[in-house]
Image 1 (cartoon, rainbow, N blue to C red):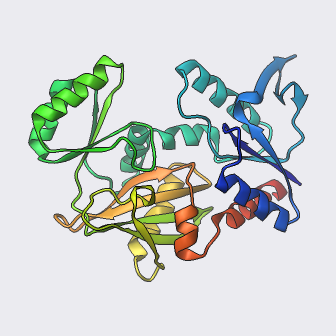
Image 2 (image 1 turned 180 degrees about the vertical axis):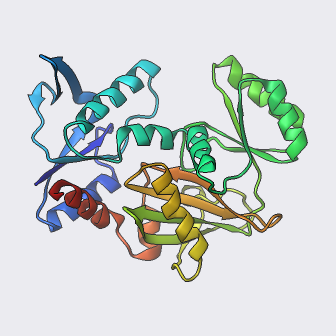
Length: 296
């Protein structure tokens, strides 16, 4: 069996190396594939995907990223080629599902439609709408529609600041994505799901800051299902609702309402901090899951 690991980077990421190591330990061969080198053809009614003009000799693929800064046309080309590949072999996560998960608004909309708890959220291209929304909710977090690691997020409490920020984004052709501020109890949760079960979970703790990402300086602490059974249950339901094979699910408690909310579902999760905090390597579970899909 041979599994392709698809990413856009010219050097191997830590998660890619973890996947390759886990595959080798399970006697599975891997090939690193840069997404920009994939091309697709329709020939005689058949759909063909090639890598640098050669046939792909893989039984499945793990999608780890499609790129950060690219035109809409490049993004659509890459996703179209990946969807063509997914017609031939299992691709984990499925490209179409990954697109929805990557888009914070569309993923939360799907979660809410599935009856899962998400924070009050708004997306707009109108700075006046942003101003009125901030005035109504009091405190809101402005986030990039597509992004990770907490980068680019800002706490906005002044409606005039919301107006100025959104006007600046609109002038650059970008929308504004606002989420009501949750007053976290000093931590949030990252729960890692593979297939239909949680393989690891951690509490992300940070003092004096509202961002609780590991990349922003938070420390991880292992948790079990008995500690937070509702969070583990919601994480599995969220991954199922978004039709993903694996994901890192971020959840947070709100001290004001006492509720537990799903903040985000990451279809391309990193796991360095999780592995350090829990001692669990998600790569082993992902490889095993993909191999089971091939055998079926």
